[in-house]
Image 1 (cartoon, each protein chain N blue to C red):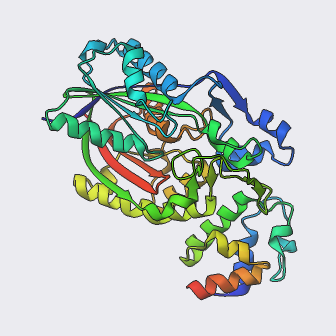
Image 2: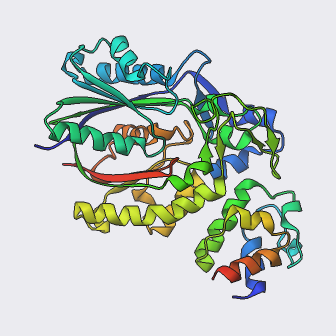
Length: 332
Length: 76
């Protein structure tokens, strides 16, 4: 038995924040600089009462409609998020009810960021090959906008909210290959929201501004851009090498490399370092920004729409944790 | 590695600041164009040209381009 991706869709919240709107708040920021370097024109932002689970639910409804999927066939829901509705219950249980998926399905949340989609595929494949489930609905949903300090122009430029839905089954259009996964918890401090969880349950009142004028606050998302960049420079090349080896596919036989869409500057540097041709390295972030665990399915969906999702496709996710993972999917 | 070449590589990361501005004594964080994004360009340049992983703290602790050159050299 093999595991296949059968369907992919995604959903973006309605509210759009353009670079022009950001510049009104941050006059020192220039449109050209953002677009040229970061590669992002606009990002979609969830409403105050709209959660990651809502975005994932909408993505699933879109998936069912676009592919005419019988939702009674779904026997497992995997939901990747770092912004659940509640500490408990599990958001995937709430999603089961909203989508009216049979109560005979399994459902769980898992907490990962930029590597989450690849990990989700690995979990789904395991459930399938273990004979535990046959039609797995892998959902991602993230609303980092809710973690950002209003004065954090860098991260407000980069991140956008989104949800995605993928159906993994015993048949489909893309066979899921072997995985290379990795974890290094020593990077935890470089991408973190410190308060709100059990370690620091109470909100802190400690906003300070760094030498570039960016706010640093325990209640908001903190990203040490330099350290995250160094981590990717170090972790991604061996990740790609190991993934090729585990799938027994030479570098030249990969038709496209779809990387987590962190930002254009970083991705372009990684592309050059890995000597990947531009034509084999799709981007889709100009209209949506960095949507964390939804970037890979969004690029795949858009590539499919333009008939460019073909052959051996290497998917790689890396970031918060640190956590990283990659696989190759094969489209006949 | 040479200081003059390092200064040229450093200056090449800037788009708006004229290359004549850059000397070994330039306090680069005072330049108008300096930003957290430019810091990433410097990290990329140092990785590519010198094979050295420059940390955010290294950039923070350096005042002049020569300071940074010294840090890169010590890590090679």
